[in-house]
Length: 194
Image 1 (cartoon, helix red, strand yellow):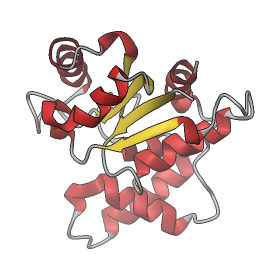
Image 2 (cartoon, rainbow, N blue to C red):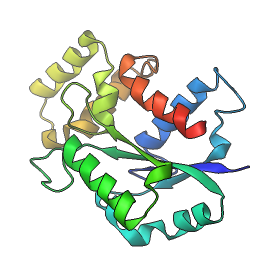
Image 3 (cartoon, rainbow, N blue to C red):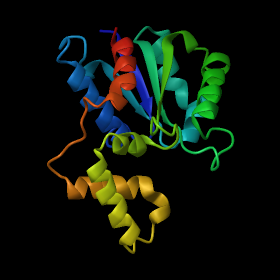
Image 4 (cartoon, rainbow, N blue to C red):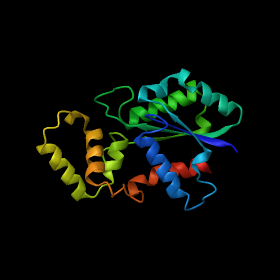
């Protein structure tokens, strides 16, 4: 069976990116259980965003593509913030840098696609920003109020803190995978598995 590859931030075994991609694939398996199966995926945890732009990180993937073991590739990267990274930060910089890299360096643009994780309203942030953007306004307000009145020392790392607070405060309420903010990523997964 020819596989597909998904490259995402974090590690391939345990990360919010990996969890979300698996959960959405399982969700899509309702449409076609034979097509949407995680055992068709070679998952590559790339660590930090800068690793996506290092040619040496792609030796195994390129070999699998050349030997027809991998037919398509989906890159999943955080938008981050342009203020923090003028080269790769923000949706536009991420997209432009990725397109140049897969076209000119890796030369796999014809079988590759990109999904940028962020808050769809602001086009900035991370996987956590996407997840938190799907919460109803009461849950968001509760978390934000708690952060405002707390003495958390790491408020600058709001993405991880807000996500952890959500998981702690609402352990029996998983993220709503039917939320419209996941539609684009689900469509990219449909195309990857087609």
